[in-house]
Image (cartoon, rainbow, N blue to C red; front, side, top):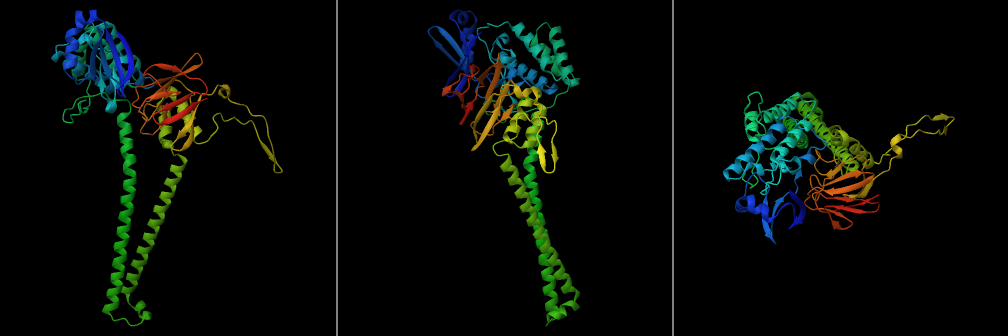
Amino acid sequence: MRTEFRREDHKNLLVIRMDPLQVKDAGEFACTMLKENRMKYLLPTEIRSFNGETEIGFDITSRQPLDILYEKQTMDKEDIRALLAGILKVSEELERFLLDEEGLVLEPSYIYGGRKGEVRFLYDAGFSLDYKEEVDRLLEFLLEHADKEDKDAVMASFGFYQKAREYEGDMIRAIREFLEDPAQPSRSVEVAGPMGDENEKDEFFVFPEEEEAEDMSTEAEKLPRRRKEGFMASMVFFGILGVGGLGLFGYTWMAFSIQRPQELLNYSGCMAGIALAAFSLIGIIVCILKKKAEKSRGKQRTDSGAGRSDEADLLSEVQDFGEGSEAREVSMKREAGEDMHEPRERGWSEDDGKAEERTVLLEENSYKEQRILKGRIRGRQREIDLSAFPFVIGKNKDQADYVIEDNSISRIHARFTERDGIVFITDLNSLNGTFLNGIRLVPQEMSMLESGDEVTMGRLSFTYT
């Protein structure tokens, strides 16, 4: 299968090129069906012919292949089941349009995930790939990326592997039996179809930790509202209490025709009213001071972490990324203004107010070459340390090693890799693109970085040193 990546009309395309012989032998009917029909589970498709050669373009803008999505993460049981359910759905769709399922591309590097976790596929109308070899590679991918610490994930991946082997590559039959197995219960998952029909729902591919992140996000959004509601409730309570105290005081004053203030002490109603009003006033003052203190603390946190995610969120992300955790921790330290390679002190002494400096032992990685992107994010100078590879920049906290919360940055925007000591940059089908020294990079193609190069992602520019 001859493929290339292109940027056309603000879209990133993966193009399959077919020669006339392929079209004549097998692909003419398939090309016609793909051109005349929009299929729900395939990537948006464009077909064009020029100088006797036919091209099928698939829109992959803002989508990532599975091998990138799961480069540093593992799959749980539900991820595996949902992916297999997606393959079953697209196979049934192809059958309705009289298309051979062996044209479905099952190579993990050509299965694309997008927003909300939906998964979409390519169709090779020229049947240039070996379908059984693709099935084998997909099975190996599932076995390799299943979470080894999750018993259910291991059993699911190995169970499906056995089913596929049992039916000698009959993928669809194996998937049907595997999903219908009562010993493999699955949660119900819903998502709107690619045409935007919110009433049409189906199972979709669930990314790792997506539900947990959503729950955490929901709780974080509710917390300020709960605090505000608590403050308002306290103010209302003390307000009512104060009004009641003043009312009791006024009623007693009028009922007993009190003429002199000295007589107030002789009437319990007046004293109770004064006490309630004073208690109410104190309560209101305490609530206001507490509110101001919370705002002050929130402002300090914002000032110290402007342009980046909350430090606690980043720390939790560090634990989630395995190989990429070192890069995240380094990025956090740089943003906090801390030294990248803090020396381990062998000893300091302070006698009579004088400090004697001793030689310190530097950590081994202090001598490693530093690769840094320097630029401004939200008006503040930032340094992104590319200390662990592959290194991904984007705004998706679950997938990126360095998170940039800017609406011009894609969820997974660019990827940095190292080969033989040379650093390369790759645009990951970002919507607004990645530029190297003013030249837009072709999606999914590696470009070498040299010291002094200018890297632009979205509206943000950095210098590589």
